[in-house]
Length: 133
Image 1 (spheres, rainbow, N blue to C red):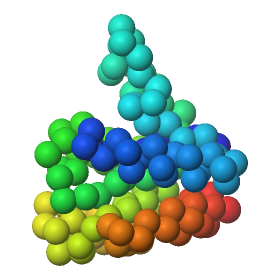
Image 2 (cartoon, helix red, strand yellow; image 1 turned 180 degrees about the vertical axis):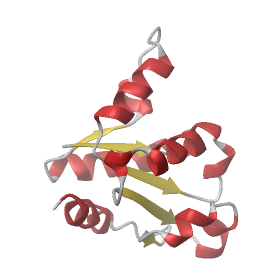
Image 3 (spheres, one colour; image 1 turned 135 degrees about the vertical axis):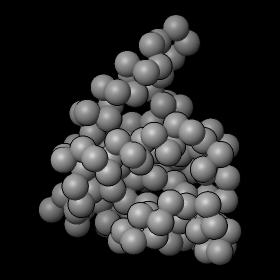
Image 4 (cartoon, rainbow, N blue to C red; image 1 turned 120 degrees about the horizontal axis):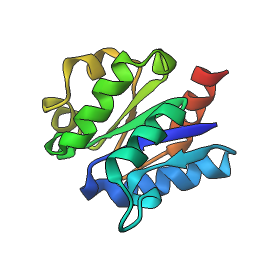
């Protein structure tokens, strides 16, 4: 099963850690950082990954919504039938900071909340398992 990881470019290290944890649990994690190479058609690759993925995990950090691409990923997931019930926001860091710029809909979804210094990616893996169960 393919999991699409949407994240701001400043969060690439976090996305890699999450991808590794998901891989260890038997999932295939897709992120632009790891799967798009110089010379690739960026829009085509992302579009294909969005269509092929079954779950989207969005890393919500204080600077996440400076990324227009992250917002576009969320908009796609909210309208694509195959992501219904399979959009997982992961709020990282102090809750008040991460929530300030987050779209209201992400605050309404069943999210995972992780402290910046105690990233228990297993909670995300468990949430992915439950929503694909």
